Image (cartoon, rainbow, N blue to C red; front, side, top):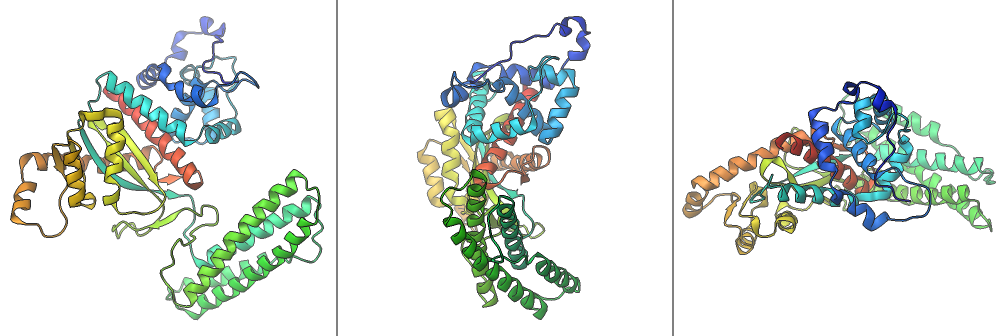
Length: 452
């Protein structure tokens, strides 16, 4: 049963000094913002039901997620801090007698509500600020960032070792459930570990990528991975003979099939690399997040990042009005329309100026913006420009918008450092979308509290 509020005041609050429950100015303003009924509408539309056990109150859940992302806390630490603080309890609408929701409950609710709820909450906040005339939405600056996946640096040998390890671990779970595997499967973890340690000793000598030791390690691990996959096929045939499989065996069997499928792809791409093929489309960079992509953005000091590109659109007063997590690594020129349409969906015909870097420039994009009613388009052209274009880009309004655009670089740095957008601790594209959306919602609430 969906609960929106917690209406159970405690008698202790009338006895204890009010100074214990006094919130900071920031939390007071954020609490006032979140009291609007429009923040409950997305939950009522998707999860409103009158049967079952009462859920964690939505008001409590949203505020706890704000504290989590605002102060970059883990779930267990968040529960502990809220339990120990009178002011944070009041902010989360929890009395002294109330039990703070368990960390596992918060994790399950985050996955249950999903990314659509977070998008709707961000839209509701932007619309509230628009109706309060805090922001006008006449200007928009656009840029892209990368949110890294929570994975180790991918190498062929490392991925093969991961594949052998997770398959062996899952087979061990099946043995614990009572599946008769017999001698069909051999544990190769010791051999894999010995090969990796020997390779690390060689790599410390700063050898090249074509070193014979590296090639030998790839061949050895590929052969071991193929033996493990072949043994799993025999186990799968044994599982198929079981007429009724308990839920634990069924779940482990599904996981085993998934790991084997990914490991086979890793073996195939490793063989292609040993044959000299350097460009492999849809290359696997992690067994645990197969949709993560290698992204190189021209910044040599950063090297290659492994994760997902995030499109960000920011309006006046530093409020982010639109964002989008992109699975692949498309050119920025293909993303400009998406950002502008996401902004105009909330502000309609108010948008008058758009600023972006030269990565978003194309003649078609500039013409489309002018057709959409944007009177001032400040996107520098690429390469050598004509005299007319040079004069156009040196007009005072064009340079003023470019100075406005430069501010989004600082905003991306702030999101990375203070709101966790540098690295997503949730797996998959859906998890990254939730992670990014929660960080942007926490930022917008924090920024709104500053400018109100």
